[in-house]
Image 1 (cartoon, helix red, strand yellow):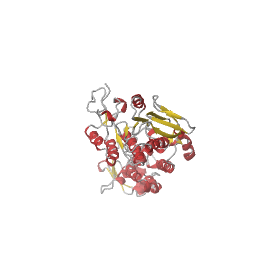
Image 2 (cartoon, rainbow, N blue to C red; image 1 turned 60 degrees about the vertical axis):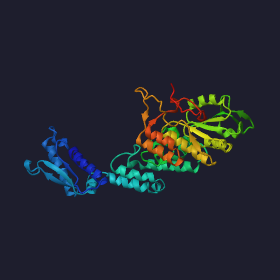
Image 3 (spheres, rainbow, N blue to C red; image 1 turned 180 degrees about the vertical axis):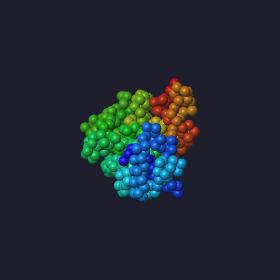
Image 4 (cartoon, one colour; image 1 turned 60 degrees about the horizontal axis):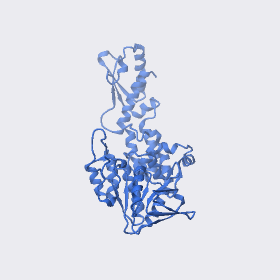
Length: 412
């Protein structure tokens, strides 16, 4: 087939694919004009090439795929005015093409069982029908979503332990880096939102219990950690770092301590120095999204707390920070404790100068934050973010403890 006829019929098929995604009573046509099909009016096009193109269009007509409308002013059979679609399936067969509606139908069939357990997948199909990608995947790449679902299901079946990601990826998918390539898809499945806010790859993997290397528990303040080897370690010089598997028991050095988890390392180190002078505080570094072994140690801390103790979390003011807080709150709830947020409101004293203006939260980020805050009762933080919708990194703020009574202010 000539490239000219191939291009014309291909354009018509793409319009048919788009029309199939949004059915209407309008016919699908391709006008042969300078704007819609300039190749037909190329001055380098010879009469013989145009005649061959017309012959191939006639063959498509005989196949029942199209109707040809001729320009009467140019004389019979001399110049095409437009093509009108008669049968989209016949056109696809004539072009030996795999039309988008068939590709999406195969994807929908292949993902039907997974979509029953993960309804967010149902949103893929209308998007794919329009020709758009989701997480940079087309309908033809539905196997990537099947792989992502398999990973999620396997990780949820083993939620209590850390798993080495490269070993897991090789064992499950036969490729040591395949899981990491699927993190955007896993993020959608975890948040159950097709328009889920982007997150750090490590946070996504940690939520699944997949780690590149075993984490280190960093703990500071009025606590004594007893390890599996019978040793006792104080956590106030100025902090203690241990592998989670070695921690047998944690004892507090005061009757009614307060516990605060901190998302970022720099802020943890500053808080650790302050906690050394305060005998009523214990501070724990989360390292971003907590992994299973971290949650096990945190559970030991919460289980040893007095009923009068308070538990706080201080993280970044963004969708990821609130999602981390949500996971920690779930751990607290298992012991009848409530997690309170600290420093997760944009301070009114923050200077919004041109050089250091914070990033505005996107609509989907605010929606994700609301999805976390509303059921947790974190209304103060949510209302403040609605008024001042900015993403703020924790390191921008001075380190103070909740009982100081002062609002957290930006660093000078």
